[in-house]
Length: 391
Figure (cartoon, rainbow, N blue to C red):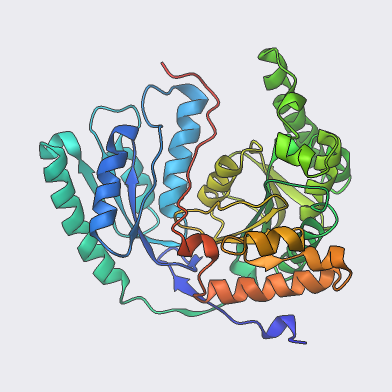
């Protein structure tokens, strides 16, 4: 068997010292009105990526701050070589302010305003020219070796079933421990799907402050549901979760928490916030797959491990997403979408540790250039967790 320490990671060293495993030029629309223009620029210029969204205007307070943090985090993610920030011109989240924040990392940034350039067609022409030049510059970058201690790995589960807490999630927990033991960072998310398991994580908190924060974020998530006059459990577990054999949110949470492995919980961070400590970190996100994936990407994760029992095509515009099946039947049925089969644990052929080592090897391969199924299928999903009304 290959020794873990023999796995080679190859990435792109950025001006601020971070390491990316992809070399994207991101066309970043700061307002929904500019999203289609960004899409057209990206379609014209190979080597660019972008996303469609409905955010960026009439947002205030903490909702505005969170969206701003997410945009900046997408641009500063180490998988991005450079950014074309594309705005309309009159929106609340101004493109220039976002461009200035991204530029502080030292990476190339250009800003375009549709209103300033006069029309959609003019903005597309200018954006395509700037993007083409940036892509050519990016193509000169060379991969160099880096270590696991420079890696931030996001973890999530979606379309969970009765096998999730027995196979894929414990295997990802093994990987989380391996990453942490080598000085890296593992992000646990999905606050909604940790309700009922919070005591297990609080007991592993690095200090009393972190333990207190665990209960605070769980309480806050439950209170949001109560203020709306609804029971969070009417939507979670989902119909697919129930059909897959899960009986309650607490059962789902106990399985989801397995992704956190067994190492101490070092800190609890806000949505789209970058970890300030190495080790196991909990990011406060909703249970919605796309919103949590976006939050971890904006928080600096270079790669995400995504377990599923029902199957999912989900991916990110800039972060490779390794899809891990909890059962063999679904892996075989959705082989075009799933990268790794952890159903071998249920079949009795492997242990979570065995599958964890296979996943770690896959991480090394993906870091060094291997494309995930979601990347091949151009599954560029993006969504920001909204925590306030639109005015």
